[in-house]
Length: 194
Image 1 (cartoon, rainbow, N blue to C red):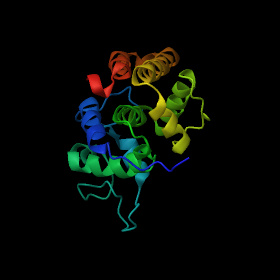
Image 2: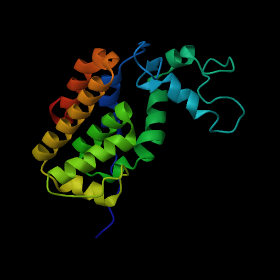
Image 3: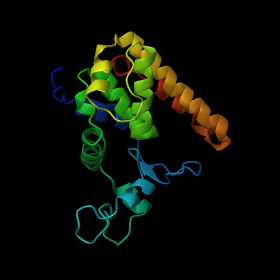
Image 4: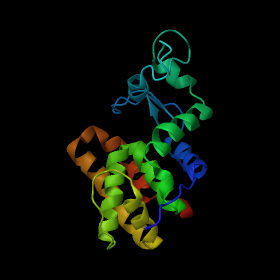
């Protein structure tokens, strides 16, 4: 089996992601807290001091902490840098040759976590007759399976699994009902037809 070369569908993925995630919100039912471009306060605080300069990396206003003011100060360029490094590259989404599944999985990953998004994609592969290990890790076998499935089949399987995941969240936690319509719209999203 030949090695899969990385494909850079990141610019398109970022375009759709920023459309879906939107601007600044601080919804009481969102466990991530204040969020902008899908970057939550909880996540930014957890990043800490990755560059080793002694200051929290996302202390954009320079006041010594990461708070809602820093989330508000985020720019699209901050989001692009963050998502390329911490999502696209870290989770190897460039291994997927076809743009639509790469973009869809990136969008799912930011919303539900990368491991869960990749595991749903792996389950979708199995539903489409291309079984791969469901381990939540995107590697060459998962990427090859995703690339070999007819788009219409993959779309039905993956969007259906995503909708089922969101429906389960709402059943388990009624406070999430406020997000249900948006989540279902997001589950139905497929890049080529948006």
